Image 1 (spheres, rainbow, N blue to C red):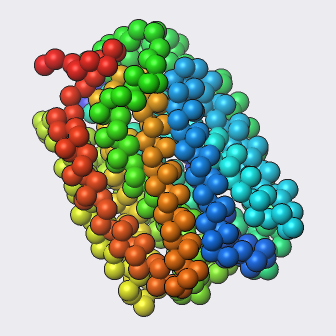
Image 2 (cartoon, rainbow, N blue to C red):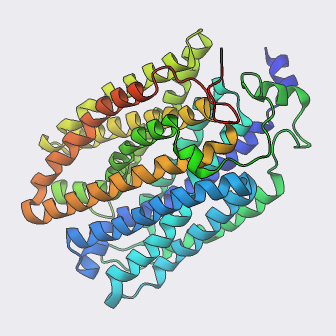
Image 3 (cartoon, one colour):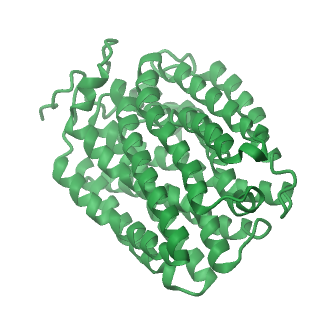
Length: 435
């Protein structure tokens, strides 16, 4: 077995490592404001509604970016498209540090807008890359691995912030500047090593055959698919429905530190350990969820059954998060949020893979963009509702947030199954592939 794997080659895992690196930078940049939210709120005298509006600015841009960046990446290709995305988000990430106190809400909203637009390109590009470099039976696991880097970035943020930023907010600008150097390094490495596997000089024939081993279409035409045609497919909108759950993940990411501060008095200096627990569990969930559906497929299950049974398992283990807002034990709350985050990341690894399971590779980024746009809109609505409720009713507003966060996955899975009952793949012309 070892000799056989050696003959196949493993250059695809170097590409996967680059996806992990980019996603770690992406989530470190994205998570900083959530970690510092209780401190920034006091420094700049923000209300919950002010904070919600800053988060909404990010998501408006993310929604617009998902639609445009997904299409751009499909047209430019993964190499150029990914580079453009990370360049945009890095510039605007660093611009947070230039915001003055007198224009804090407007300034942060503007910086978050640019950050959101650039960061929208990460997942369309990464999912497209996995579709190009891995066979179907390995895609959920590969997606789970790079998706786990979201938690690495989210874990790193509180430790870095806690080490640099004082409780009174001194040095708050520095964490926003760190990602610039990391992003520059990534771009240089990416431009040097990335090519499609079919033309990459370091990919052996055996590895290329393995990558294409379960693809219905071995070689796709160079003709571009219009975005409007892709958007008319039921499969694109089934994925979009599944991405409504992004609102839950962003709730953990952007409101988690505020919930722990408001409910249990956790501050910027002691948030690191709770976040480490939550996102370490999320990491484990992402990798295990990706592994599980691949395991089922290797046991002979169809792609349809393997993906959906894994999604059902995810939805069931998320249910206990409904209990978070009614417990008075800090560590019970943290562990339940961690369980919900683990279930979400396992869910996320598999729904991303649904796209490359049923869509041609040249439409993958566009479909991920459509889904990401819907997820961002759901997050905006959730932010606005939660910010208003918290300002009016206090911490009791968290009860409803956790109730929805725990229960929505089962409902959404039912809708996805009705829209895509057999998960029949579409070919290069968006026609169903015949058995």
